[in-house]
Image 1: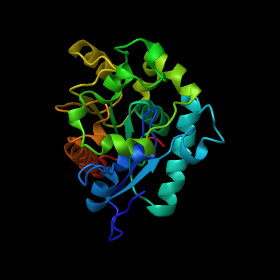
Image 2 (image 1 turned 90 degrees about the vertical axis):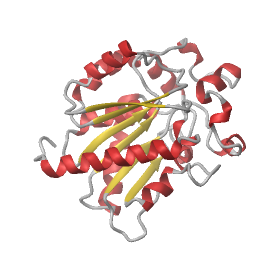
Image 3 (image 1 turned 120 degrees about the vertical axis):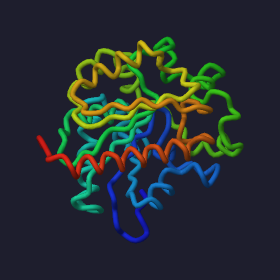
Image 4 (image 1 turned 135 degrees about the horizontal axis):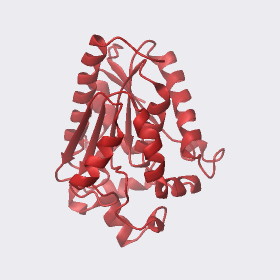
Length: 270
């Protein structure tokens, strides 16, 4: 967690890491430009990077993790409790990477619009570009390429420090990834806030050609605005690479745009 030094909170960003990573993904220490927690606090945002169920302190309680619906309920309850305690009345932006993007969408679909600014996700399409059997597999050349892309896209210290960030993928998440195309057809039409989608140049887990992007955005039929962004010189783990600062600045810019919209739009739903 990080907070603005002056205590004036523009909004709360709830950041949800991907499979096989923990919350440290959003606080990369390999270079000063990488951490979202640092940049967010300096920009007036409180940033909560959660260890999702099955990771970090919750790994003992949920050794197999949680299925998507249960995980979304857990995350929403945690986010609501955090905002009530640390930033009462502040609006929330959900930021999700990879599997965390699926959770962000599921949380948003059940949230409505009151207090929710938008959903900003990266590293997640609707259809896998690889065989589902690779999800949760043992580390190797294939997984390294999928997770990272060209290693030169990251600060040198990234891979030494990644040992504190990488974690086993809980069993319940593996099946959800393979079933995401079906699940997303149910979840995405219920997201009623602005959405931003980011695809790295070297994203290899998910298909993101024009046809796939058109299918994805069409499913977000209730979202008042959908933004698609391509991030050059980046691999799947966008928040740990040299382009992390550029990516995080775009996240904050999207949050600012959503704040303007929220001030001009009467809340609907709960």
